[in-house]
Image 1 (cartoon, rainbow, N blue to C red):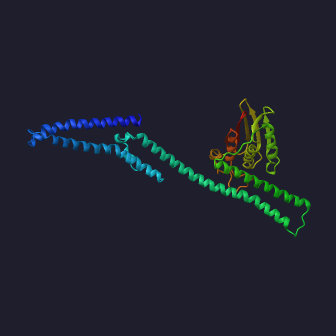
Image 2 (cartoon, rainbow, N blue to C red):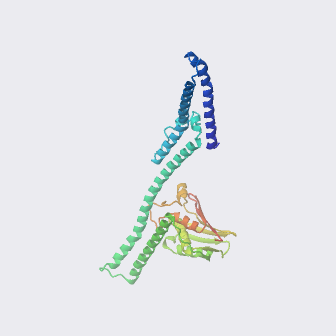
Image 3 (cartoon, one colour):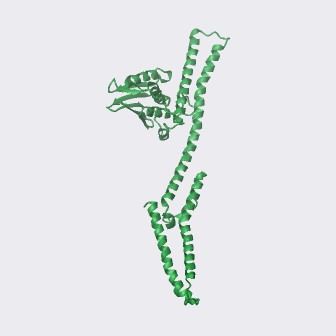
Length: 362
């Protein structure tokens, strides 16, 4: 029953009780009390009016307490929540019977009390999650600092070697040092780009998606070629299977390449033993479905649940990492920016599969 109807019913009951009380007490006053006081033979209507007024005032006070006390408790509870006191409301148990139901006086506002309790539980849950996010955020910042410091250390080291006048480096050695500096500089540039994207997503800014119609199969072939040619990928085996060689959809090649590189990097960096990384591409009239599957060590349930959460790192800062340190959150956002979605399936010691679904008509 809605609170409006319940309020009308309670008001009618209260009014009926007032009429009933007057109907009982007024005859008693006229027929019993006044004659005993020797006032029965004369007209003392003013005494009856005074008595009716007293009864009415007493009833109003009782009714005000009946309707007003729950409102005062509601205001007190809201004030408690406003000051972020998320402990259980001190008088909540007093409002309920032993069976856990609201007493008659508080049943009028039971939806309000129920919603306030739900709000308290939600705020309490949000507070715990916020604390967890802050911890993860600190770890994420530490990881980013580590990821930026590592290539910077290489750049400083190789540049110091090149600037050392006590050694005459051969052209081959100089080329090697410069190549390392270039690779580490490129890696830092990728880190900064990912940080820029993460900040824009975090600020709820829309990242411009410049879609062009392209062959997604050839695009993924090129991404696989770039990834597999890197030094850290040499021990892994990459394979691509597709139902057709020409699947044209509209997408932003720059953004989607960043997403797929991060997915492949996740499979590479978290599998220190050689792994088979298989990419399957299938499609229907409306969607393109891409499976990226590895037979590596898989994920724990905690990692699987948090892998797309911002500030979550699958590796610690003590572990070597050539990745962006942004986890897979940016991947999810880039895929969703293309009106697609991504899911993960994983079993420990059996491998991980990322399932990306993209629309064919955007």
